[in-house]
Length: 406
Image (cartoon, rainbow, N blue to C red):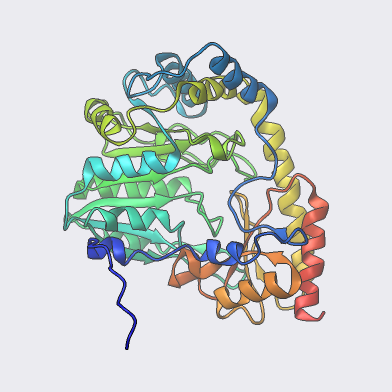
């Protein structure tokens, strides 16, 4: 007699079809193995700076365990305004909302703008949560792929993107600097995209959570009289867009302030969206925890002290890893201008998930499979170089050599 068929929940087909994380599939197989050098997740192995942790602890000690304003503590929103003003020019009053994580900020933006059946254009490969959000809301996704050049650097076919964005396109979704490729937009590309979206009436949602992890040689040239990009961050749509433009910029405390586990982000959006954004936050999370916001407030107060040394360290880690990988025959890699990832291909990485699983099982080297970020990145591997000790990166390269028997 056949065993009874287990009862399946009556899920929406879209939700039932959501793929599991291939990065987790690799990482979960190595749980409990202290010998593994893990570089698969998108976070540093450094803890949040002590003054930030102390500010949150003091908030808890004062009993700040109650709700705050839906849009965030007024003093945190003001501090974010000042922080953004130093990078991009003053955004003005009533354009900033604080959210419980950058990913929540992105989902809030999607909920503000999208109805079932709307068209979204997304540049890929990209962090898988990004295209999943429109799909969850019933929108239709058009993927515009980056492509690697002969040197391993991923490039955008700008004309192909502009042709894909039509008056029927509700949202253009961009992650630049990009996870996983390290690609970022130039100032002229941003201006061309903004001008085109103004003509089509398309919203731009710009995921710029890696903006401060920028290793460029200086500010990108200004276009059309726009404010020059800050040398302290990658080119941003916040430099170009007016307060009336259909542009939403998403930021996060996770990367540049070493606060991944805190789950604190923000939105910079047109003032007319602030009220509806507060309503959506009420229905989703009510507010970010006050003690977490106190930590964010302290991080912003110390931004000039905390961020430049971290970026300098990550710059060194990037060069350490890329220089070492460049000596491994068969590795195809370009040095990224931004972010915290080396994205490369090598012999045997055609099935990137199988390759990553073999690397961790047989050699104790934990990398993320490129296919986790879309079919466009099949055959590539992502290596997070945000390591407290750069020697770990070199040790990892030696394990890679062993896997390739070099």
